[in-house]
Length: 199
Image 1 (cartoon, rainbow, N blue to C red):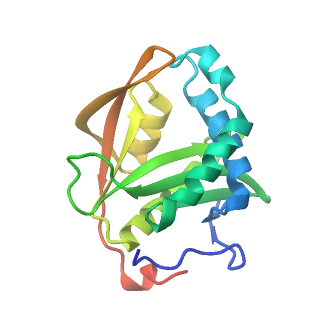
Image 2: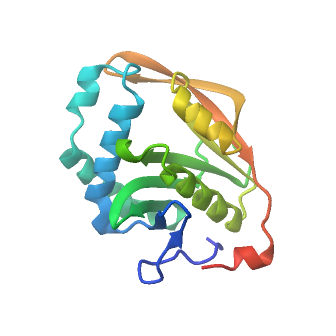
Image 3: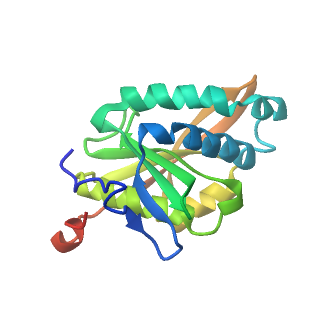
């Protein structure tokens, strides 16, 4: 990846006005990220997915998945965490678009979750801003994401972040219940060199 260097914890990460520090995720963050993801799913998908499926999600089991995926990801996938007062309260993950119709230079936001108690407090915005900045620095021309069609809160958030539905749709099944999804897209433009050089 030809992007600017990922800020390390020693460098202080990237700070936002909301008191959030966004930094590269490390292997030691996997348990905290699993807690963010499980809590985020239960909060975001209540009423859209079977309650038993959401309640059966395990932070311990997801930690093992996060560890395996983190080790297998390589340099093509970027994992970021958001901290507030030293606690990991958000997680974002992006990399190359996986859809077969993706033009060259298309990135994809694979995941963005925030602890329920920190929703609408600036954590998601800080993560999204850093994901977009890094995608631009990496030379991406656009960024896609998939969102549950019934997730009005997330769709509103992505709309405010400059994304719009591009007409593509899909469906995922959870415990036998189909969950329709729509694809959102945002075109990216190169930032001035001075801004791109910040580390």
